[in-house]
Length: 345
Image: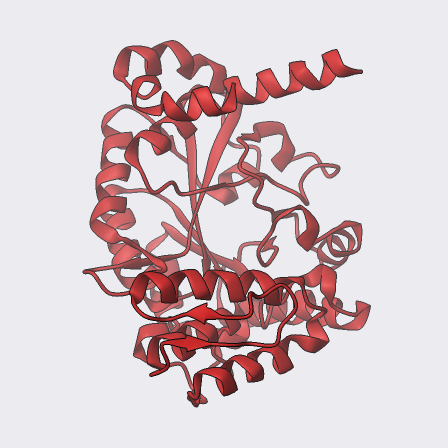
């Protein structure tokens, strides 16, 4: 069923089918998650901003209603088909410039979740360190002694470097947080690249001044996304508390209307748990976002039992997949999976 639905996305996203399925979304909101956007061809980890602009414009034209995270938390959003919420993670400068220009121009609310150590200038994001090493290495192949990494990684062209970056990122995510630095050092040694102390232009963060100006406009809000973006479930209890508490403290100190919602780094099922949910709640925040690919129930934003693992969907790379995600196809798939689980009991 899943494979059949995925292959049928172009058909399912057509206007007649979309109108038929959209009522399934009546008591949910599709919370979309972006990371980086790009202007031209540079940056293989970024989505072309023209594609994002086209997709968002089409959703507006088709009558989808964009709502803010703050409205959802306040219970101010009435149930209706076609609700969408837009978020972005990490706090890169392209989110404050390219992405915000698009969303403000369309009147779409945007929530950006900030990795505060990145904004404060004390670090380069760990996955960007990997990308920097691979992009600047002169070696056609490398060997990195990290568990789960193949004996040889090919770097012969941009495609292979991209694949190598994904492999290394996955492997480092599996390590205890205390071993992350040694893993990054091994990658730097294998590639023969010295990583700069401050983020170079291609990995630059937005500034607090940019965040304040956007916040004043009323359509862009900012929430905490940890200090250093570790996989929280792989950190010690004191580290996890610091990552949550200090990131919220920094956002609260710098901005007039900080969004009291945490965003778990990586955010998948094994990346956080009850410990992290409790830490977020103890800091006085009202919710937290995960990434599970499902539409979010409207009730989950105001229900304390659900608010600390709110659902999000990664912004798809194809227009048909995006339309399928917001129009009811994912709801149909979830109903099918739920029925299968119930019948198996």
